[in-house]
Length: 426
Image (cartoon, rainbow, N blue to C red; front, side, top):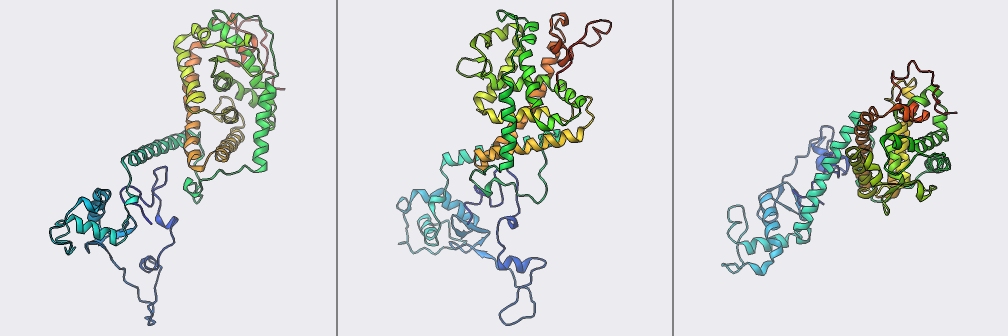
């Protein structure tokens, strides 16, 4: 059954992509007969003669019809007439000819009452007409789906999303129910979530003042977050299986992006402060303190944090999976095993998709997934902003680990005897 041709296209899925009706309908005998390989036999044993395709006739006026509209076969003219007038009801119209008007193509416009009465008689249903509010919601959904499709293409082109393999039905219309995770998928999620939570036990003694902090102070305060990122990564088996050189390249290349993602998890929506679950309130940084160091950069950072924590309301598990996807970025400099890293990122990207499908119905999951991955593109832009600011810090005021991770040495210490602390990957 097709609901109003112009409002509910049969072959359109929620992402705005056109699908062949053959994918979702069982072909009728007439369609088989008209297909190149479909030969219909007539009742008298006609020896393989093709059955001629029958034209559909409007049940109201006899004009040529394309198919069902409002649950009855009707032409485009009667479909539009019914949509405009059905909700008014028969009593709204008067017939000047004792309701004996003949309905055909030439006189269907002369009497609205008799035409509408004939529409109801052939089974057209007014409850299938969308209200203005429903039309507005549908238009918005179509627009959202078009935007999502653009995001998906951008992510595929950027290598941040895996292109759907041909032949795999990813249409969210196939199921409106949540899809449970398999035991192996639950085990993978449990591994990374436990790794993240265990990393919160790491602590660092520091005497860096949190009152009126400079940019150098903020960099040193972030050392605890960096050590926790490193500790979490070490607890993920597939990361530990990489050569040490690749581990260091992934951590150094993704350090700023990983810290930005961690800040979303540590953001307290009630107090508008940043602190991890095991930290005391004395260690929390409020938004005012952070803004003192660099207001413009902080505004962009907070815009991202709020979009994730407040607008999208991303949960902890989703953020941790995004952290791992970001960690395994195959385009980091100086990587030797790019293919291995790419496969790990692909694995966790699919795991995120499966996790969303286990929490939301498939329609919402399909919409949410590309929005989350698009945030990794936003982080790349934020990374560039942070990097340009870090070029202006005084390296002599930065802790050795942060100097190494953020690669702040450059050529400034090439003649120095200072020994930098290596990243603790083992």
